Length: 359
Image (tube, rainbow, N blue to C red; front, side, top):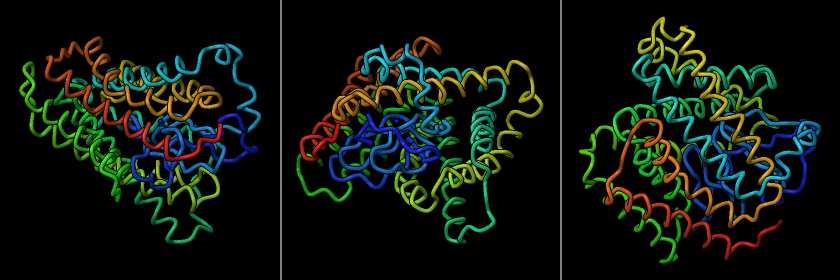
């Protein structure tokens, strides 16, 4: 969750969300589950190989369409304002995470991750069969490593939101992509965004409403670090595989890694109708809806607007946590989230001023 949004890719060409090359200093900071883009690109969503220039960016875990599928988008979405579509995609992702949290008491975080990854793996395998034969060993190793990162990132994040409020977890997780976005920067302005984000994290750690579980905070930070690794490795994966087969293979690895954890936590309850239905709903909210909305929005929206809107993800996560999970936040915690949002938006605007935007 690429700047030439009006161009449609060739049939069979990957149109991924995440997995962009390493961002330059001060580049837009992605929202929850979305890695940082290259200079001037809007922020993508997780689980996709790196796009070529001019490709629109889909949302987390969603299959990549052919040109015919893109052309077949509904007229209804084309009439919706682009900012509304982006905000709708953000809401879908975060309410999907909140809905997943309701499964924890029944199947645990590992079980919820397993259901989500399994559905995404099946969907991708129907489009791109994971191919081992003919692939270079180093490329297979890269896909396997990316699968390990995917598994770890999802597990640590779901384990974190079992222990701390969703809005706080997403905000803490932002440290990873924000650090990648300003990695190597020598501009004081860019480093100031990191300082602002850290101030927000400190405010969250001293909130009035919640005595934050330290392990939950550590897990959210770990998820953020893995998110940063995800950004760097997914860029290489997109260049190593011409289509989405690398991602499909990585998803198989991620699912196999999570399988023992998910089965140990969920057991036979994973196959209960309630679990399967909610798991499918989480998949739709986390993949299908955001993909459709963002694909249409990215054809028309300005890069700087997209980056700033995606910075609202922690606030949307806090809202989803409150409405779905009853997680209220104190004034201090709200201020901490606002500081991280300001840091992300500032980094996005700073990058858009330095980089020409092709629209």
